[in-house]
Image (cartoon, rainbow, N blue to C red; front, side, top):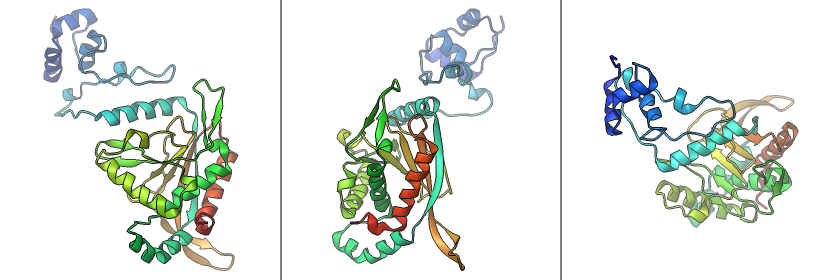
Length: 302
């Protein structure tokens, strides 16, 4: 049998100690790709780990393991362990959770005015007071007002665990992958404490110095892309949480006052939720309440 296999496939087979001719005989095929070598090994070797998929979904090992080198020059880059764990969890969540995203926006004039008033005090305290601190405070209040968002569903879908604490996760983009340190008891903390904790956790996340007890257990997570751009996105729920809030860049839009148009800075809000527990009306009320708190931050600074 004349065997057809790319140099990359042959090199991969050699690294795994596999005879390419044995692969051809076992498969009954003359055209051999990398996935055939991995399948011959029974899914071992250096093949990517199988991902969890929904019933009836295609087998990733069979359909996605492509010999890309057959089409041109390539190079392999190992996925960091942290990124692999996140990918497996998010892939499973996307496959198994019926999620919906509700979009709204909030008037940021009150937040920006408050930050301007507190600028001198922030410098005295040595604290960077970002808009994100106000978002954490508003989310903590909403999680108290709407307990079903501050809950988790059992794996078998039969029991809802309602939490008597409010912990807010902050998704941080790092060179090592996505990390989500958690601000514990955000509903009990003041704005200055939250602002300082955001800066501390985000900085240590970049250096991989966040402790294990500072990760996990969040009531809900905020994914903030405001510093990068975009007008909307669909964040994926991070189980066992039931919802996640996405923020993108504030933009100035025309707003009708009833008498005239005026420019208003508005932040887009993207709330993705688990539809097994939360309905569309629940999400609309939750995000409407959230937008009202951001528009009048005096309510959350008390």
